[in-house]
Length: 479
Picture 1 (cartoon, rainbow, N blue to C red):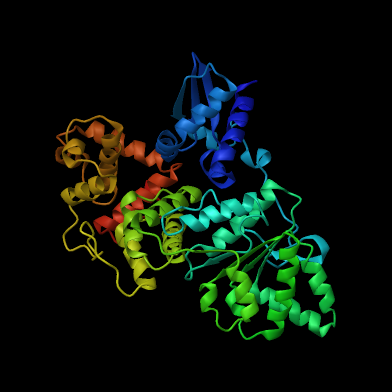
Picture 2 (cartoon, rainbow, N blue to C red):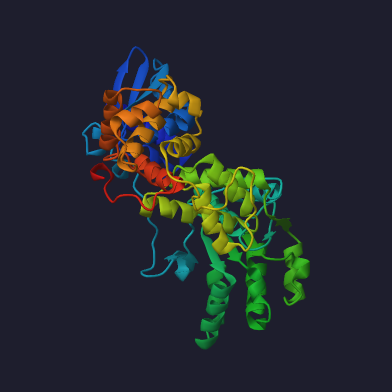
């Protein structure tokens, strides 16, 4: 097995743990550079991959590697920018991990399944594995795991209720996907109550109501979202009553969601409510701060965006109404990162939050006024950079040569030259009396690095805004 074959085999094992989306993000254009004396050297295409692999992926990668070659005892990482340019050593993940496509209906978010049934597409991003479990939803998650493994046996029907945007749809779709994963032959139908009503109306118009009942009885698991919207639709309730009984008597799984518990659904037929109450009833509530933070970390990891802990804590602290709001703010922050090449900061996220929430709670370390009130000097620039990278100012200005200090030091030198127009001598004087050759080398290094390092470009843009510069140049290296 050559290096490329070994790396593909390792990544295939990692897919089981990580899933396809994170795999494509963090292992794209990676390669095995060397295997010598038990040390596996992995090449990464960009510098900002380095910290994430070392912190979050090294252990799992070593475990997968050792399962294939027990002589491997250590994983080392090395950045090689050339891997991003279709280097023959790197792996094209799309060839080995193609996206699994469903029988999608053209122009519609639906798929055709057996017997003429049409189901909403089950979002592959919704899994029971990536659902963040907290005390507020632990019972609901456990019930879904049981139903996925033993559909139609223990908890039938399963009724999940809770407010808007708290994860009900995630649980429903994830359970449906898990049922099919355990048994691909299972027919899982996921529809909204509105879609069911439309089906009933169509069958009334075509005088084919018996066909509807027969069609729905073919499923092994029926999942209906927002069942409360059957209220005041008597004929639809009647037909659902017959479908429910047929599936239940046939040992088929029924999963329902609502914004209220069954006892509060006073506008539904009492016979339906009684059947809902005969199964497992679980609720989901808004999770606490720690769980909200864990959700943000998970979503940030899945998207491949590098969002600082400080920013995620600020979002988790303020986005306290729904998970949908929580994830929405993060998505907007990541969109700014991707479209404008500006890394999310507390100040930029506070602006996003003010669009979705009347009051944004202040936190001790946050300065809510994004407008700078002081002149932009080298001293201010040093403060902004060291705060951004969370490194001690004394170490950056001093003699420390660890990477955590050298990169911020080089960034300061680059920005001082490009944005403040300072001379090399003045910059060196302000940064521990360094000579102009050292400063020139640092500026040259950053100039070259931002041509290929998108994360560094985002960092420069974010720091510039934090420092108070009007805007970032279109092309930094020509500034």
